[in-house]
Amino acid sequence: MLPATGPAIEAARQAADEGADPLVVGSPYYFGVEAGTQERHVEAVLGTHHVLAADTVGRLARDPRVLGIKDSAGDFEAFQKLLAIKRERPHFRVLQGHEALDAASLLQGGDGMVPGMANLAPALFVSLQAAADQGAAAECARLQQQITALARISQQGPWLAALKAACAMLGLGNGRPASPLAPAAPAAREAIAALLDEAGLRPTAGAAVSR
Image (cartoon, rainbow, N blue to C red; front, side):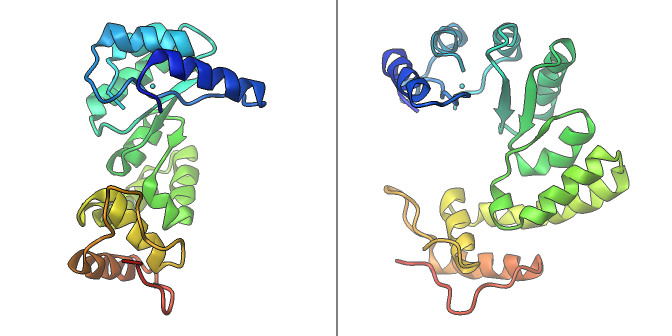
């Protein structure tokens, strides 16, 4: 993630020289950018945290080197517009990054998910993908209910701090997000532990979030 096209191009060249095949390139950040600027940036580096308009994505998807997009905006109407692009360009992959829309996205033709909560319960999301592949809508709905309940963890303060705390409770990492974020507060950790227990995910004995 770099704030300007020049450094992003240089980083992409370095990654390619070191053997990288696909690249994930973020839209320029810090200052807001409009659609044309985003498009020029992606065209220059080939690849994008600002939400891209469907028309912009559609133009970029014409290039076979642009492999797909992960959408975490939580706007299902917008996501369906991305699926329409996929129908016209089958090589283009559309992934859902918002847990609340996972089942609906897969059943509507999405290619997969990039769910933060899979760090806590990977088998749950594998089961959802398998059910969607079979077209088992009722099973997808049941699994989505479990995912939605688990995703309440991300509402316990800053979502990344909450996720790190939950991981630490399961024995994964120390629960400390990168600065400037602070670890989850005691009240948030208590709520997170309760949600893990509700989901059948038992915290590791002695696991704690570092302060």
